[in-house]
Amino acid sequence: APQPQPTTNGVGGPLQPVMESTTLTVHDPYSVTPQELSRYEQLFPSYAQPDDPNNPSSGKYVHGAAAVELFSKSGMDRESLKAIWTMVDQPVDNKLDALEFGLAMHL
Image 1 (cartoon, helix red, strand yellow):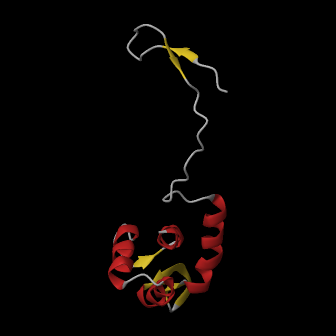
Image 2 (cartoon, rainbow, N blue to C red):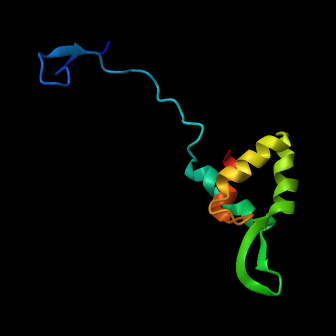
C-alpha cells in the first residue's frame, strides 16, 4: 500500500500526510497522439487539392466539397460538422491546411 508522504498545506503550515495517487491518468479526448497525427498526415494528400488549379505547385488544401464528402462519413449531423469546421478553420479562409485537417479529423 502507498505510504503517506509529508507535505505542507501549501501555505507554509504544518506538515500533513498525503497519500500518493495510484489512480490511472485519464486520456484527454481532445489531445492528439503522435500516431493519430501521423495517420491524419497520411490521409491529407488523398483529399487535398492545389489552392490554384493552374499552379500545381501552389499550397494544397482540403476545400469544402471534399471535406463534406469525407466528414459526412463520420455519421455526425451537418450542424456538428459545421461547428467543427468553424472551430478549426483559423484564420477563416474556407479551406483546411494539413494541421486544420488533422484537428477536424480528430474532433
